[in-house]
Image (cartoon, rainbow, N blue to C red; front, side, top):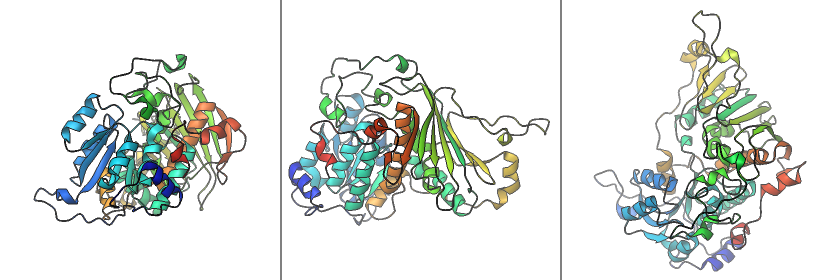
Length: 468
């Protein structure tokens, strides 16, 4: 790393000029010898800064620690006074504390190898872009961004810098990942024409969202940096229905149940079936709509054209309490009489995949697919290809990628297109109707309102991250 870190203004100038003069962290750092407990020597671990240290950031930090591959050198959170942020700071007394990641990079960029971003959706992009601008490997929680256009910028910056990247959809480092990959290569999963994905548990806005009349206001907590919390998104008053956990409910800050769960449910299908971007995305139904928060329930459909020898495919998303997809009766188990079939059981979150010869049911995250109906599985089970079931977990995979020992399993070149697919669905969820999309141009062809949501302008003061 460079011996002297330039100021943010100078850094932006250098980055805009093609990153000249910036030393970018490459994945060739040697781990060094391991200690007796299996960990690496403290001086040879990856030096990690955490942006967001409570809630998901707290859990990420604890899980990363389990890898014994890192040192925690900085803890940045807009509200250092909240309980879990204080606990994180107490656990790492030598780590430097910040509320503004921009100041953190200004003061100690040369001490950081990698950054973990666990902030609300609307602030993923600015922190992640800043990390890559400083040549840092970066893990960012899902969904990767809050808009389609932000993904485009992260893809370009990741390619330009070559830093290690990972989105935090942890099921992408699991048996589910390797099964889908292997079964697709071996032709078990083929000719897929429909995927029904669903998340039918209640959400934070269930019951109150449809009656929302605007943004509420509560007293500002002591020590809160609300300017940094809002980041590049529109500024609204502080409210307990925004911080610390309810931000996902609101269009300006979150991506609803779709942005929260689809990266865990359709990730492998999107990757290995090469779903890419759709030609049309539609709001089939929306219940309890509101101009501020997500619907109480919805059905969203993406129409994906034929590609690479695979047929056109419709992908349907169902969310909201009790809003389960209809299932082909032939996929259910045989009833006691051995002649009729019972309905296939649909849980809280998962998917049903309809293929040319076989159909599959899967859950979320690491859960593997099951051939349905079971009688069909029993007929072919001995012929099904084996697949890898043991691997480094998603957190260790990122750190091992930082030191050149593994490839990241959900790099931005994979996770950003998945996020864009999801973001198009979020726009349909917000506006309703049928939206025709030109994937090559990256634009809707029949809606100015939808195009305006593809890449909203950042709030004044945060433009620097959008100009590179």
